Image 1 (cartoon, rainbow, N blue to C red):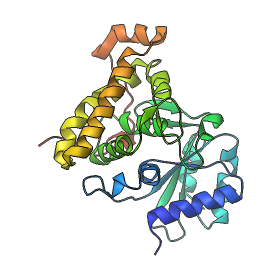
Image 2 (image 1 turned 60 degrees about the horizontal axis):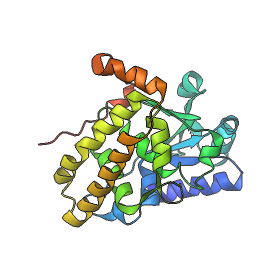
Image 3 (image 1 turned 90 degrees about the vertical axis):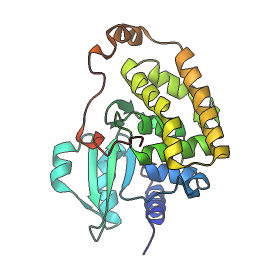
Length: 254
């Protein structure tokens, strides 16, 4: 039986062969970018269903593409959500793929213009992957493991070439106070969670060092007028959405 990583690579190879824009997102994207870090005992985890992103107009080709590799659509879900999201079941129905179209929307919205998805040949860029992991208001253990893996194996910088692009993160969070607030709250929680995961001290120091560097850059980055106006209201008004997917097992310190 093929591993989930092998399943993902086979889907990506088929998409490339058929010239279909498809980029992996979620934990498997972290696994593909961080092969060493995700094998550390503290950061190693299982991978279930696969998540991908596409951009218009390639979303119109999803049904034809997945049927060509023997997947079948979740007809009811796709009829209701098909403008922004689609699900296709694998041949034996033991797992499925979840396709996000043009954006990833959970507690906050992260848009994926076509040119952004073309920055990386396999997944969404690392900065975007980082934001998808930290924009969930109830961060869970897998998210913390994935964020730690990214920070451990990749430097911060101003490009998307196996680098966590600080300019991209600041561009998103510097325009949206709510997004910024959720990400920063979760970043502040991570050091304590690393102790729970028992990440070795050497690796922990690298993760915390890059986390502190990024926190400082986010705090000092220019903010838009929209950001500043919303910051005046602060947490007196809820700043995030509560989709069903967001209630995924909050990580708590013990």
